[in-house]
Length: 233
Ligand SMILES: [Mg+2]
Image (tube, rainbow, N blue to C red; front, side, top):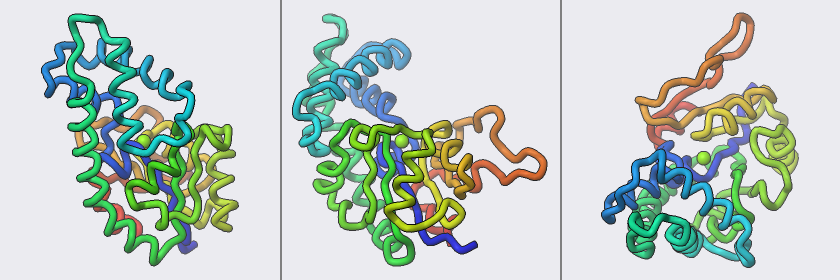
């Protein structure tokens, strides 16, 4: 059946080629002189994630403000000897993400002429202002933020809600994302076609691939978002 709809993840998919927020923050942190390794850093990053989600006014924060705020919240929980300048971390991270978004925007513009597009993201309630700030909002006919709708990927209800808005069944839709459990397994369980965005060195999780008589999961794999057009064609 011809696909009419493409659902896309946001973080790590539209703003980085399959690299999650925590390692991206960590790279920026190290580049600014931070000493923690990724494993140690990640536990503090998770605390900053939770603090960001609880922040009063989070729903209004745009992309840059959200990064700056998270860098500040992270700085507040880091051990005294392991802190760096949070504004510098935020500036570096924002610049890198913005460059990737700008590279991806023409791809999304072309896709929007051929498909109805939706974003389905496990986010913090401010996905819409982030998309507005990045000049992407007009390309999406459905914007689904887990903190707004109350379901998170891989819960089927979050995908089905977006598909209902776009008036398409799962058999007419692709899901493109970088998180195998949330994006790929969640969408594949509904019968959607799936495109996994992951660096080449990332191993396919166990139990992926095709069981006998079942569809291949993921349907396709790409290392850079710009290759999505070739896969969908
Ligand atoms: Mg993601």
